[in-house]
Image (cartoon, rainbow, N blue to C red; front, side, top):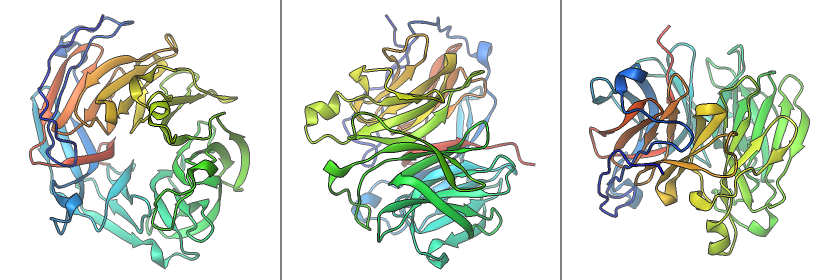
Length: 390
């Protein structure tokens, strides 16, 4: 059985209120974990992330939402927060750019895009109300393999249909568009062959983003040729109440696409028992793992060891590892209050987890560790490791 390395006692406050944490990072069942940090020395991580100040959710802060760069040095045991930028609303998805900077995307129903340089300073602000036709951002963006284009997922507020916009990376303005192949598109990722994979969450929503008519849910995964906008494949799960949300490619010779699920069943018991991971192998979309440890809700997903994935089961306070060598269950690798954003280790054998009180490390060949946030902050669901400045 896995044995915990350490624990921090919880206070019972949630991520957006008091920011307390519980950490118990464990050895794994399938791979021995050696508590030797020198055996897997991690380089200093420069990570872009969004967060909210405590109390902002109740309207007590005029500038509650921020984006910025966090520098994590596990060897030195330090975590530094560089000058944060206030945001006009909640930020969500982030995209690392080749020059060391990043793109930040407003959460649904989003109205802005922000491009920052390697120092975290704003280079371009783009309000999408200037785009025609007018739509709302759904929280995520990705780039073409050659870096020539930025792709964003969006929703037509009048029809509810999903779209992908093609944007100029310098101005962030829309230059082309094509249908996402579903409703409520949430994240998109390039495939190894240059096609675009889009996770359409399938939840009908009002223009303000509120969920409606869950009985009409229609989630799907689509594969699109971005050059023509033609949809070349579409996959669904048997249960339409499993919303497809976030995606990650495994690190393997024949990569799998992992999709984090969020259950929307009316019955709380059925929702809590629902799967939290779907896997696409290039041919079919399957539910390999019925393990209920995720509680029916996965906040983020990242590549993990052995060609697998780590998911953050936020509501269950767990980080869970799935891999194809043991596909029917999860290995619990972390216990934290409100684990959210996941950043893979540079060697693929571990992950940094952002949670209520700080950043935690789990790695196959290094001791578990946690570093406190330098200020009280409630991190959002996503973070991204930045490239070395060009």
